[in-house]
Amino acid sequence: MRLLLVDDDEGFRTLLRTTFEAVAVEVSEAGGAAQAALAIRDERPDVVVLDVGMPVTDGITFCRTLKADPETRDLGVVLLTGRDDVHDLGGADAMLLKPFRPLELLAVVERVAGGHRTLAPRVAQPQSGEAQLLLYARDLRDLIELERGQRTLLESAYLQTVSALTSALESKDTRTRQHSQRVQRYAIELARVVDPALASDQSAEYGFLLHDIGKIGIPDEILGKPSALNEVEWRLMKSHTVLGAQMLGGIAFLEGPGVGIVRSHHERWEGGGYPDGLAGEEIPVGARIFAVADALDAITNHRPYRSAQNWRAAHREILAESGKQFDPDVVDAFRDREHVLHEIRREFLVAA
Image (cartoon, helix red, strand yellow):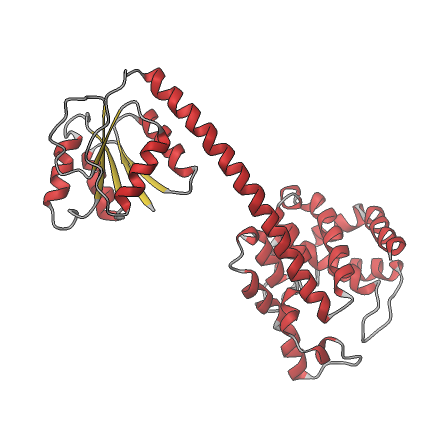
């Protein structure tokens, strides 16, 4: 729902905006009737909340103008006033007397947006700025508690989704689960050096874990083929990055760097990678970090087409590809944190 708040008191608009944004209502603001008319012309709201006592053009006059215009007569209008002697509402769909509870205003706006008129004002209450602030404080506390509870449920649902996706991939490739967990740990450790904010971004964390989720769409005989892939097979294998990004693109908790990691982790610093042939800083930083983590794990673990090599071989290859396959800054981070990465690998070997 889109809401336009019209009031000459900026502080009061801030209180109203906070209320509605807490429940994910899209809010725009105007300080007077002229500014509101421009805002309505640019982007039509579902409901207009108007203060009656505005200078130049008061709320009732502006409401009457809106209701007289064929282009805006269907707009829902809610009037706010501190006067209890207002009888001519100018065609408004509802009116509330100040002070009012934010959740009460929210309920009225929702009814108006649904096409229901709420014309009868309630009995006036003693008015004071303090009374209004106390009502806001109480309702915003309730909203915060509600939002906190919803966030907990949402995070639980996210974790269940990740678990289901990783289990689905593991069912196709039994090597995937430990590989995904190892490279996630490697990548987070590298990110702590290269981009600390990314290391604590939950979207990136999930992107590291789900980087290969697109392989769900790759035939088993290609995933497990013990010899080199032919041209058609290789083209299908490379499509897993795009498939993965498409699968995860609509998932809210991956909004941010997560999908970019899934799509771009096979790009190369010098160019020539896939799927988009990006180069240098065109490649998302999370994907550049992950490319080193993924290579480290690929070199030191068995693959259908070759045997595992030791850590020293991985070290040499990663350093040799600095400025070619890998971002030099990420390779520097690898050298700086190599002892920690090696300990992470030891933890997985002990747990296996």
